[in-house]
Image 1: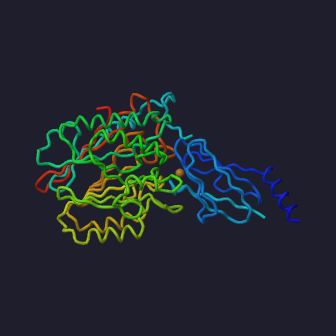
Image 2: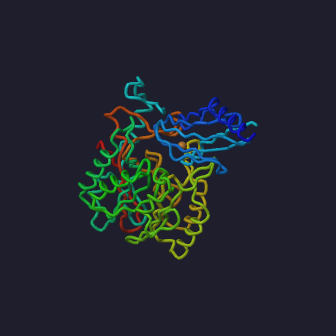
Image 3: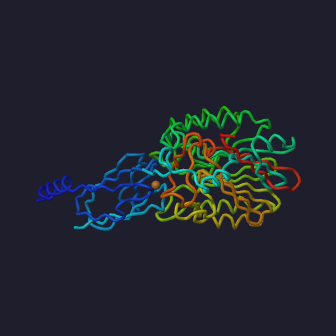
Length: 98
Length: 315
Ligand SMILES: [Cu+2]
């Protein structure tokens, strides 16, 4: 049973990746809704570095230079508020649905 | 990408651009402390005319060593140009204050390159970190290993020179979602204690990366608890606040306080609200050096304000 769940999640992760683009000091989309198991990838398209940091320490990317990316797999449902620790006015959210 | 004005983008200079040019034409500040108040002077002109008894120092900022994007493919090269100007100064300044973002990505090689070029000035450098100096894996260790000796917390400290009390503050560490720059209660308590025994007639120079007052909230150009620091400084007869971060000149005088932001030696940024974001601003190559520079500050004798002179790399 546990194996089946794992396999299902791995499958879901492969099929349901989602991308958040950082452009002009903005996370887009500002709110992303995804099902559990989704791999979310942030890509920095600005010519200055940004970071991706969960407000409650669920995840933290190292600084992303231009065209660098960071991925995190969401395995629990809930709302994840995150921001750029270099430019904290940059805030956004990922909503993970069961 | 954060593209706005591009060299070939067809945006002709309009009246606004021209005015900005004029404002920017005197970049690079020579801070001269004249009787306790900093006064801006032209780096090469007035600075050379400074009396021998005057005490001057340089403010350099935002060298962003490691930056190599369109806004300036050679940030190390333009720092070298700035340092060449420092070496050519007729009146030797006492030291350099660096208001942060020495590096672009906090990499060891970037710190090494910066150190090597600044060393050519043969001047001591008093630094505070910018947010770009604290993005190594250990979140500030790379910076503190080099510049943190004798400092407190994330790198704040004070020292005295020629009767002036200098205070380096850190407002780029551990920033909170939705906030601006931040000093934090520990640093504010330290500041209160640091100022406790100082006479109100002591000239004060405060330096930090992000402006201590809110210059443009939408781009994070301000410090959430900066007002609390300024309240502690209110009783002093001469307070000069030097900042970087915004890569352009901005000056403001409020009572006994003078606020000044310096140019970057690496790349310009747009004026508040004039672009979709505060990212590096691409300008025609022949215009770049008129938007980069440094500042000289001179303390003149006899209760006159500090003199600040901004100089660009184009002049
Ligand atoms: Cu950012």
